[in-house]
Length: 241
Image 1: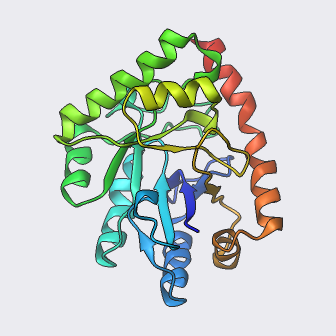
Image 2 (image 1 turned 90 degrees about the horizontal axis):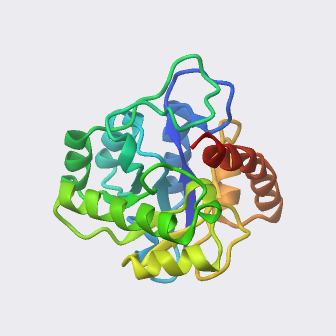
């Protein structure tokens, strides 16, 4: 079975949240998986009986600066999910826990990432909880972001990561109607054909990441518990709008 890891920021900047992993920790985590013989695949679409897939939500420019050079040196791929309304902008959509905003990749960086062989997927237009939007608004978020990315990189966008990992049967159906083949959630509580992902947090060391890949029950419960706090941000994302 393919194990899918979900990262957000890989950066040395301090913030109070838990989704920022320091580059040195990330390097150790991936190096440990490689050393132990885990095959790291470009996406879950490459599932051929196992392996690990790396995914990165939000499309921050620290992915371009810190992740891409390292993975390229290892000849390893990954999937990065873009919030199209915030390309080249700061994360004003987020309930920030840092005194300084984080910057998202701009169009040039996204195109370069795609040219290097990384998969570029959608993370919606505005990073609102799609389950709390009207059917037409949620559909627009999925359709418009897909087209914007395709126009930018010149290739089909096959994957979508739902903001906050939030989805239901209707949102999943809308994503498939929009043309997405790979639908990604966050945490183990998924259904509707959505691919589960194990989130990696600041406090996770290499051994913890390895246990996540092995689908260790304690790590699953811990990850789901931490992820549950994002539901407040999901609610606020729509109320702010």
